[in-house]
Length: 204
Image (cartoon, rainbow, N blue to C red; front, side, top):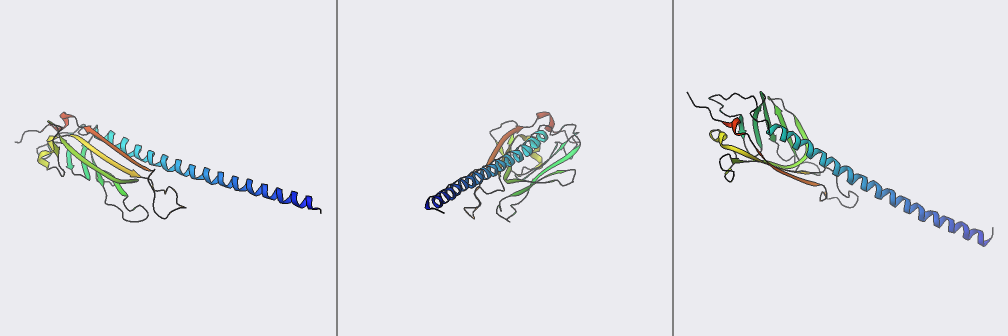
């Protein structure tokens, strides 16, 4: 075997090695981009699921509710981490749980949507969710939670603030620290309650 043949073989192996490294690099980059896309998609999907549910419930507060002397409004609880009300005969209760304090994302919280006492747990990546209440006559006046039952009839706009983060690290191979800088999402909306659902009925 001549020197020329050996050089040809070495050249071929070197070229193949470079091509293999390029292919592996492209595959790793594609895999990372796919993970980033999935994490972003999952986060957006979870946010949409929760906010659509909230919007649908809040716009129907007090629907088909008959006021009584004991409960003159459809609202039963108005706190920063809990809001419950009647809708079409059902008692809907939103409860934001405490931070789990475990795993890579200890700030994650469960959100409960309980219907007539039946607990429905949602693990959507919520790390912050609060309810804030405003006066129906003057929306510049904040009703600080927990709002007393006597003031439920004064609740008008409800401000919901939500922050979520993805359960996936951005670059898990490079750091042991959770990097969610690209995968955080914020949502805030003020939803007004129809005035007719909060009319106080006179006592006996």
